[in-house]
Length: 191
Image (cartoon, rainbow, N blue to C red; front, side, top):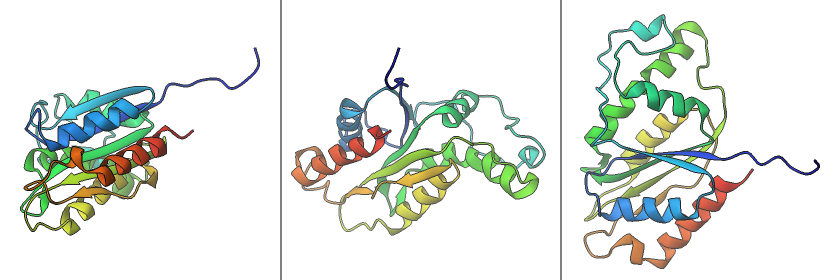
């Protein structure tokens, strides 16, 4: 057998939206439609993951002591090729349930800080999709999302896909945003 061995790409998408047919979901679906390989979408509003309680167990151990759906997500983070954070922006920040869920990344930070270990060794590509209405700003959610993505070992991040006019137009109807999603998919599909 000659030629390149095909390895299935794995993408993990964190969805911060509670709306099953909302704007964030429509862009996630558009992205997934164009992605190669396997995709796991973690809906922050539906998953059984408690927030980090700062018990400091992870200061000495490479896992969290709280047993819930985090263990499956953690395993996927360690193994996947791509990570995406997608969220509506409420009061200039990603949603509370998404922040709560991703607070469990504390285990990765503690490993680096206190034990000089890197738990997530596989480098990844990543990026974010942030949507809002009104006169919101992307500064805080962009910073928060970048800090969270940084904990999961990105080697490259795509320019954020942001749309802050959802009160007057659905992003899926905006040609520029749909093109940005297509470019994001191409970036994530690269070998």
